[in-house]
Length: 300
Image (tube, rainbow, N blue to C red; front, top):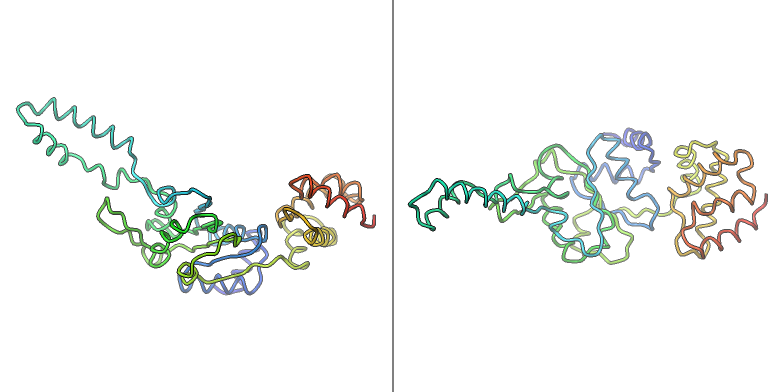
């Protein structure tokens, strides 16, 4: 795939990318290594992974990390309830048809009848599904900085050779080369990631969108006139410079443009209409008051 083809595909998926983003993705796909995306919340890290999956027509598997997530949540586990039900059912059947056998002989017969750790009892969690050899996926490891260092280190085997050891099966699942997933890791840099993890990735820092980029995104996604999109984009950029607890994201800027244009039309940029719709871009009382004060100071 060429750069222009990739840019066009991302645009068709609703994502406005630049050359640096395109070349990073192309390099990652060629080298079969993950991409680590860092930047402030709301700059489009998650949206990039979604857009690429759509552009390539690949299944997107997303893992949203949080404090307390376990390896079992993201890798694999066994269906314990089904294991127990199967064991009890077989024990009853064997006991009914094994008169004269000792307890030890009954247990040995049970083991030969069923292996409760074979793959039929295995539940594939997101990481195992991503490398199970059933088609290439896009794997999004979202906000990895929110998880523990222990979980982070558990990912190293997967990100090194796209394999996963399953001791209960006595084997290692290895992803076929042509089906190695396209992997994105996102971080808001709330915790410093390990050097070992960083070395396994290509790195891309995603800054806040320029006025031109934000205008294009709002124009395309909100389906509003270009001049209107530029005005809203300019306001969003100025608002992001205010002393806010939570700065408006790109997606919130798109929603704001949609609301303003749909509900108020040509009068959308009047002060009273801008302030009446603050709840789209502000998410707490203090930010509402700060943004309202700023907007009331704008020219009508």
